[in-house]
Image 1: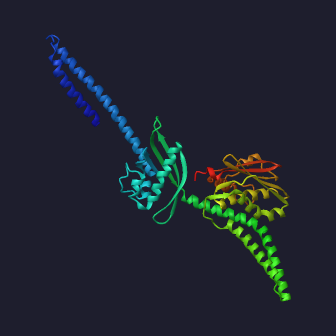
Image 2: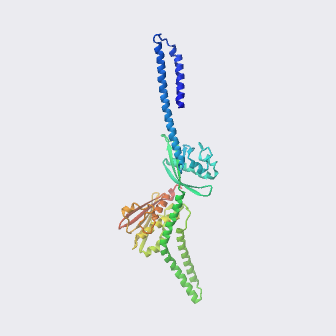
Image 3: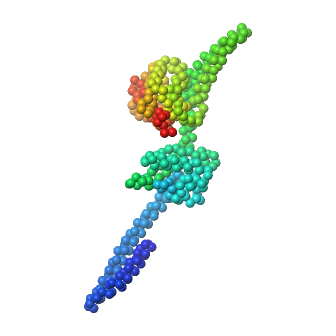
Length: 418
């Protein structure tokens, strides 16, 4: 309403000045002078009404805009997620209460400050805020919505993980306009994923246990035989001692292979030969394949190096090979090939099992969807997630009665941005 009053005062003063300087000094015949005064009054009323209408309309628009802004702010502050708005230079314009509390900035005048400047106010989150500068720059360069997991420790020692979405905004000329950042706390979800992953590993280990037990029993039988012979002859033969030591080392290797799958491993991304991963898995399943009369054909057509975590890639191949063997209970052929093309390496694992129906094939990889009576439906879900985290793709083809083919494509190390 103050805008309307202000405009009304301006119009009144303008009218008084104009009539005093110009209208009242015009030579007007006496017989029409009353009409001129009436016309002056009418024009003043009309002009005042027009300006009052414009002012009231503008006031209502501003009021509605203010109400909408307040509703939006109320909604943003009520969200249990981190929400912030930055300008084209990375300066904070607006952040919700959750975000301020998260970084310990409740009593800081954050508006107009960059992440680097705010880091000085909250030393504990300095590293996390400085990391935001780099991830913001990645979003600007991508010129599209980016999404990634970001983790950092809290003052109480708890490690928090957020699913962070960044939306860069640009002017028509391509200049940076602003950045919207939304972060959702997925710490509990990550914990649940780790527990499910551990259960899936234990399930794999349980199924491998029978075959591994046979592998361990063979060297133990040899050791027992030589010990009994030395006990009866009461003689120690160096050759027999060396054989027993070799057999003990073989048992140790078998147990070590089992522990790699069983115990939690820290992620360690580094260059590695994909063929080493496959060699390890083939050795792990060799005895089980013999028991099931399955012939394993391995055709390495490349010595490609990928960038990733060896234990996670082992888990991917283990899950796929295990499924292939289960699809051939009465024997068959398991073919594994690797070859590189351009800047990527292709790993193909193909079996001659019973295959999967097309309708069921659509759901393969969905959490808790499984074709097994005792399965949890997490093996391929976990595998696809790991492949995706390694910037690769995983595709499954299958025909009933002919078998299943799994295509895994990973980037070569030389082209990995890391």
